[in-house]
Length: 118
Image (cartoon, rainbow, N blue to C red; front, side, top):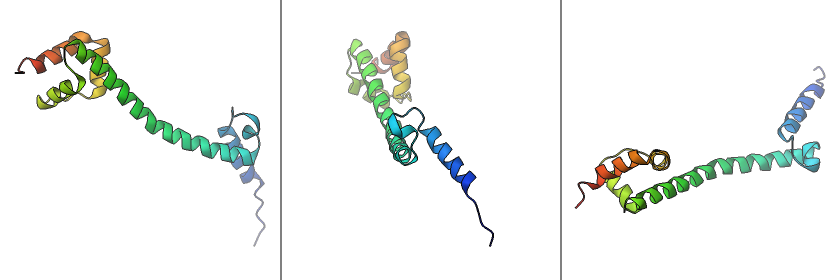
């Protein structure tokens, strides 16, 4: 069986790892063993961050919708309940955008939902 020299493959692997940890501090950017651990932790935190981002934005949208709803004499939960019962299929992201940048349109939606209210 012929001898396999792995120098090029090993170097490619190391280069790829060090490229990933570029910009890290101290030995974590240029020492293979430290870089490997740093990259592992960085990937873990990036994954967690992507999940957390969704939670943070949903909370932000809720705050914006609540502020706009209170300006029209409703609470957030009452507004969302009314929207659901009237079958308005707008998601929170869209509602928050309307509340912040297009208050007239948001007012129309609130008016449509509340005019049949007892």
